Image (cartoon, helix red, strand yellow):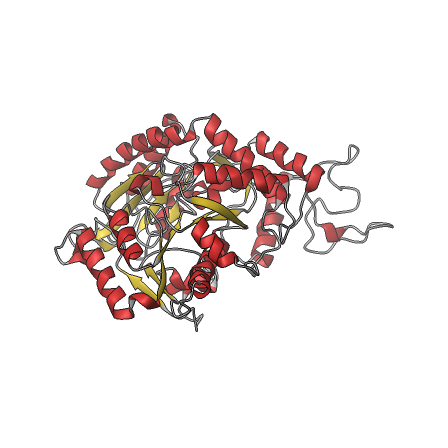
Length: 493
């Protein structure tokens, strides 16, 4: 590794004595990258990184007192490697975004070329740049018909915040400022900002952080596996009746928008019935309520089409994207909106909200190169072909005692774990222990959610690699008891 702590070396003069916690290569006479000095010892480097992580890094969702770490240093395709030389199959695609896999030289070249040309500039007011323009045009060509305007962001949560602002501002600008309510669903995930965290349907993002965004109401999600939620009624019929009743109770003239993921990602790859979104969209439209689709996970081939909205035949008023727009190589996102919404929120004075990195030319250049790869390599078709194959392999797991359900659309999959198959109750203690065992024992990285193991592999995955992922899950889930205990297995070397 050729990195070093910048504050270990002075800007000029002689080298000082290193700090006690300085990395092993940051010592006089051993600066990396020089021909005459020895390379740092990999074992010492790994030990220093582990200690420095424990001392200085603040990780999301890491309980206090847990000391183990997996420190990754490289990746290629669907494989990543840690400081100890161990390799892992990345079946989580870094939370659902690395469509084209790790280590793509084309992306590095696109970023470097743009940085040499115009690394950054804003797009406020009349200022623009060629890459942002090209990407905006490309996105509107790919998007459902009617989404003709693009507002660039740095990520999904930021995009949701903008979509919520635009929805309320639309009604303010069109003479209905009392329309402030936002409808969402329980178990939804839309980000962790104050607005996006409030419309997310988990108390974890709200408890202790209040007061949160007012005027938000959560509805029952369309989850066919959990039939107990619907009192024996058809899933769509129940959800539509609840939505209609909620609109009446709040007042249709007080609701700005409804936000939802076409397929719920962090909720466990929950695929709604085919008639759910068309009927929801029609009901909302009849009351002048805007529809925001959160496609941060589902866009750019994840479900086998450019946008998951295509699966359900709906065009929202606003559509939020991120993640796969650059395959995660740089942070970037976009909110797509109709001309009607854009016209209203822009107005004579312009939309007053802008970010430092809106339309960042390097991020846009990377996105363009990424979209080229997805199209050139036929990754939408591969997502369907390999996703179906992987789902077929995982379906065999349904016979295991702790496996309740297997779900899939394209390359978006989940295995729901249960303590009781009849009652469909979740596994005691959640899925974190299972995810740890998959990583350490089988070398497979998946995402833990409260009920499910979520798989979002890179769209470049082939059938052989999918088989390795399925074999890894099989090897661990066969040792999983409904009480959450996992039988012993030799740890990988």
